[in-house]
Length: 258
Figure 1: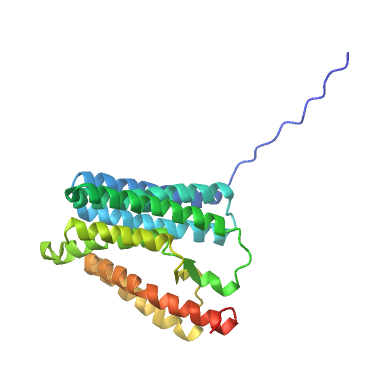
Figure 2: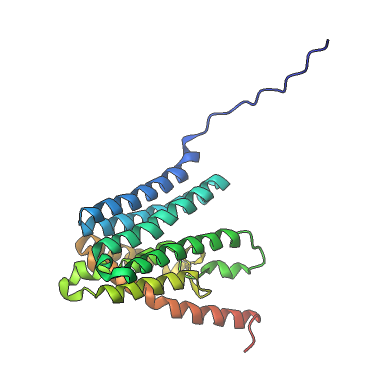
C-alpha cells in the first residue's frame, strides 16, 4: 500500500517591524477614539475632544506610512475602515450625546444614530470606489463627500466653540441635532471636497507653507480650542469652494457641459 505524499509545509517567515507600523498606527487611532468616549463618560470634555483629534492624526499617518513603505495590504485597509467607524462615527456621536444631546430627547438620539450610520455608509462607499479606475488622475485631489475624519471634526465643532468661548457659545441640543444630521448628509453626499493627499505644492510655495505650518503648531500649543475652532470653520467653508473648483476642472477637461 503506497503512502499518500504529504503536501510541503508552508514556511512562515518573520515579518519586519516596519510592516506592522501602519496597523499599529491604526490601532492607536482606534484607542484614541475609545479613550475619547471614556473622557466623555467622566465629563472631561477637553480630553474627549483631543482624543478624537489625535485619532484623526493617527488615521492620517497610517495610510501615508503604508504608501511610503509600499506595504499597503487588504488586511490593513479593512482594519482601517473598522477603526474609522468607531473613532469617527461612534465616538464623536457618543461624545456629543454625553455633552448635550441626551438633553434633546428622542431627537438627540436619532441625530446621533443617523450620524454614525452615515459614517459607516460613507466608509463603505469609499472602499468600493477604490476599485474604480475610470476616474481621471486629477480627481485624486477631491473626495466624494466629506471624509470620515473631516466629518468627525465638524461634528465636534460646537464643543470646540463652547470650550473656547464658554457657555455663551453653547447651542441648544435641537440645533446640534440638526447639525449632526447635516454633517452625516454631507458625508454620504456626492459633493466633492478637497483631499490633501492629491495636492502638489510648487517649489516657490514650499517656504510659505512651512511658515504657515509652524504658525499652525504654535497656535495649537498656545490656544488649542481657538485653533481647532478655526480649522473646523475653514474646512466647512471650503466645501462650496471645492465644488466650484471641481466643476471648473471638469469644464477645463471637457467632461462637463457648459
